[in-house]
Image (tube, rainbow, N blue to C red):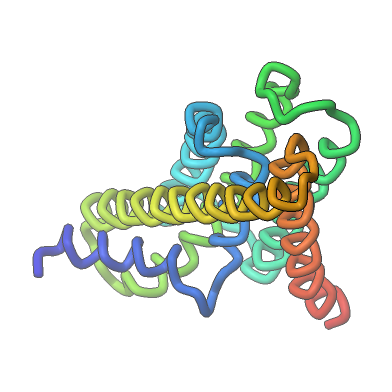
Length: 209
């Protein structure tokens, strides 16, 4: 396997590793309030997140930036919790899930800022596997490309599964002659609550120690 292929695979496997699901959870939290038809708006936020983590991944891997690893490991689930809570607050402060009613500036800035934090987490792993490697450009680039592909796969799966669940719920509601207007919003809220609870289970042990 080529050097590019090796680090590409490592990047993809790192973000999609279910045993370390914090990055997966953050991407799901970003996508939770969106439907498939809003994929363009979702892409804007994912781009902001990508820009953020690409910056710190490069800076930290090249040795130009350094932060305490334990602090980063604590901050990552906090970013997940905040994102999930924003989703929940939106559920009760907005009438629809329409993109035109969202504060895009705040969302974009937060996705960018949280990306900076996640990038530092990615860099800890990359530096550990690089060891004494002298040429960092190819590993850094290919690892980041692998991360992006993994991120897109998680995003597509999240949006597709959510769309399927909303569709099935609507089928049941129609048979029961119930309204289906709020199904998407209610599912987004339920998913965000679940994410917030998982994030808390990650944060509390860290604070306690």
